[in-house]
Image 1: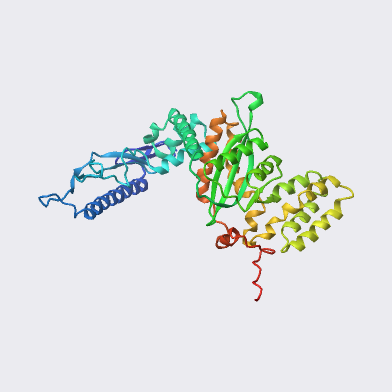
Image 2 (image 1 turned 60 degrees about the vertical axis):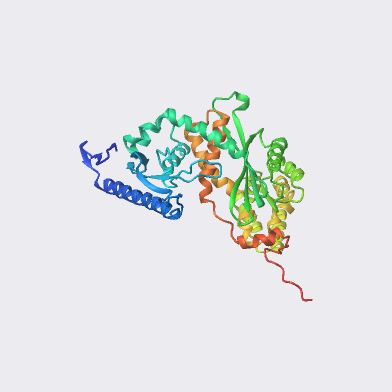
Length: 425
C-alpha cells in the first residue's frame, strides 16, 4: 500500500486506487505531537524552577525563558511531527567561566529522527532487506518523509556500525566479573573476498554478570576456531581489564577455544555443550538407531542427580559400544566435562548445559545471510553481527536463580544442584 503524509492529513490509497484520509493515523500523530509539546514544556519549566534561586547582584533571575526555538520536523514511526521548544536563557557560568546551556533530554540538538527509526534501519537490514530496497520499504512504513533514508545513507549507516563496533571493542572492562561465559565460532560466507577467505569465522563470547545479566563480552573474526585466534581475543579482553576468571565456561568441543581458555583462565571449570555433543554422537550412528540414541542421551543430561546421570551414561555405553564404538568414544572422551553443571545450582542448569544463548541469537543473522547470499566484506559482516547482538541483548533474560550467584562466586560447592547443609558443630 502506498502512503503519502502531510503535516495536516495522512492519505492512503484504497483498493480502487483513490486517495482516502487515514483518520486514525492523523489522530495518533496529532496526539503524539501534543504529548511531546507538553513533555518539553514541563521539562523546561522544571529546569527553570530548579535553578530559580540563582540570581545576579541586582536580584534578577539568571535562568529564564526567552521565547521559542524555530520549529523543526522529527521523523517518527507515525510520520513527521513538527515540534517547537521554549528557549532558555541561562546566564550562569561553569567552573571554567563558560556559559551554562540548557540541553533537552527529550529533544536533543540536531535530532532529526527518533531512536526507533534509527533502530528500524538495522532491523530491516538484518531481516534481509537489501540496501537498494530500503527507500521503498521505509516509504511504505513512514511515507514520503523517509526519502532522506536513501540507499546511500544506508551505506553510510553501515560504516557507522563498523565504527561503533571498533569503539565497543576497545571499551574498558576493568572490574568486570562474568561468573559464566559461553563461547562459540559462527561461520558466514563473504561474497567479495577471494576464495581462500570466503568463509569467515566470527568468534563470540557472552557472559553472565554477578547479578545474572547476560552481556556480549567479545566479538571478532578469526582463522577458523584456532587456538591462536581465541588466544588473541581472550588476551585482548584481559589487557582491557577483564582479569577475573569466570567460574564456568560453556562451549562445544572445539579444541581451539579450550586450549586458549586453559592458558588465560586456568581455574575456570569446563562444561561441554550438550546440543553440540548430541549432534556429534548421532552423526556417528545410522539413522535407524538415532531416535533411540537421542532419547538415551537426553536421559543423561536430564537426570536429577549426577549418580543417575552416570547410570544413564553407562547404559548408553553398554548399549552401543559393540556396534558403534566411534559414537561411544565421542561421548566418553568428554565424560567429566559434560557433567560439570551438577556442581552448580540446579536453577542454573538450563543455562549451563548448552551454548543456546549464542545459538538463538545467531538464528536471525543466518536468516539474513540466506536471503542476501552473504555479506560483501568481512568488515560489513562483523558490523552486522555486532548490531544484531546489540539489538538482541534487550531481550536476553536474566539467569534463573540469580540470587545464588554470590555463593557460586564465593566457591560454595553444590551437590546435585543443591547447597549442602551445614554440619552441626
